[in-house]
Length: 97
Image 1 (cartoon, rainbow, N blue to C red):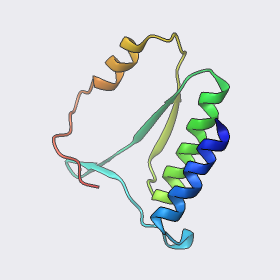
Image 2: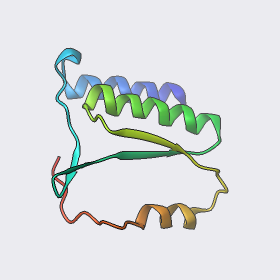
Image 3: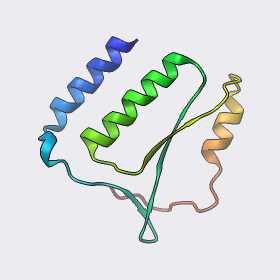
């Protein structure tokens, strides 16, 4: 699993074609306020590892600055996860990257 994730990161870096010293600073904006990009990780080590690698990829390669990783207890409850993802007190109507 880790090798396929590493392959994804390496091919994405090549596809993006960014010079690591000249990456643009990016953020999600809503009402002229920068929003954080939140990633969730369960208490499974493999999930924490893949989430940490993806967070590094988002920060270092894509240039997003406000990235946080939240650790959640995993009860394998798909409905609860989808409910957290769908719940938003301030919905975004349009996203421009």
